[in-house]
Length: 567
Image (tube, rainbow, N blue to C red):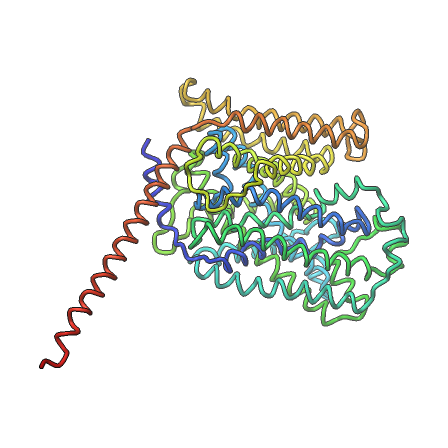
């Protein structure tokens, strides 16, 4: 096959210009998008004051899974990293399913961020603005405004990665300051401690509602941004050191901000608005509405401005990372070569940007509300997560010789726990949503079939065998979700409590199957050769630099006596 040679050449057009600070800004900028503008209210509506715990659980899930991906990202510092790892460990079927789920989860965030901005705009005190959102979804004029924002996101990514990095770092600083200021201002304006015990108590809808809040209220949506630095690994200066710092640091910083916002929101809700309990909340622009309720008009204006900046910053980042993901899918062999082209002058995969723009418009046309998009994104994200824990341990078995700048001794424990966490969150999303998104995953299989079924069966068979665990996992999880506890939308065949144990055991069984089924496939062999070539080139460059330095020192030494006084 000639493809690896061309993909390597294309890959070399990326510029390694992003350091730890820029990558952390990318991660934090992805995490702090529209989630903080709506997540506190949606989580409180489901879980009441226990929504605080939901944010902590969400961070723990994201951090555990992120640790597995940090090792993979440092091993394979390539653009669009998140869509590649399953391909390296299990071949085309599992790799494609993981890449499809990950791409669906990320590309749909882009119209979601635009939708969030327009939804906040609808609270402006202008007649035309109020017509942008009808309380459930965007109107035709609202979709038009959101479409303009999509064009802005992609225009900012069209020119150069350095422009993207500079713009994003500045936006991220603003995005961190405003949520922090919002939490502090609301805490000082009004804080009713009785809200944490009245109106049904700390967990008015039970702990199952807390778990569901993790899955569908925007919490998974929010923390999903940790993967953005990994998708830009091909442009990191020192991926072994900068990637884990960026991924873990961005999650922990965001957790502190989100918990502070949730506490402030719970205490600031006017008691009259809780007449029907926490589930009766129905704010259009939650934090801005609270700011106006307590006379913080300056804060409301700041929030309306940030409703453009925060989601737009995240939309801009995801426009960048999804284009790298498309490039990765093309290199995996499941898209035309056009989408693997990288502009040699700017280092931007422009055809991939155009494809994602078209898909973003399609999502915007179908899902016009932030809540509906958040649910789809969250479940698809969790499905994509399960590849990391399996791939990281499978590759330790298949390729122990590959350098691992990030290698945790506790990974044999962390990986199965991450698999359990991901499976539980998928179950918590509730039936029938889980079934709908799993069906959406199956909708991508015809693309895989177009490229793969033309191959001889003897060549295809090991890919099918190695990927069978993931196909079976999706069907089994759909069945468990349907048969599960009524607390999670199921038919009640599995009683409450036991259902969680069953999901955990299923996760461990498929984890073991997945790790054992990995094989030394052609994609892994190709990336080994590429990494070896990169290492040789780096060694040669270092040797040339050392030789040049030595030569320069020698010339200076020889010249010194020539200019010295002679006796």
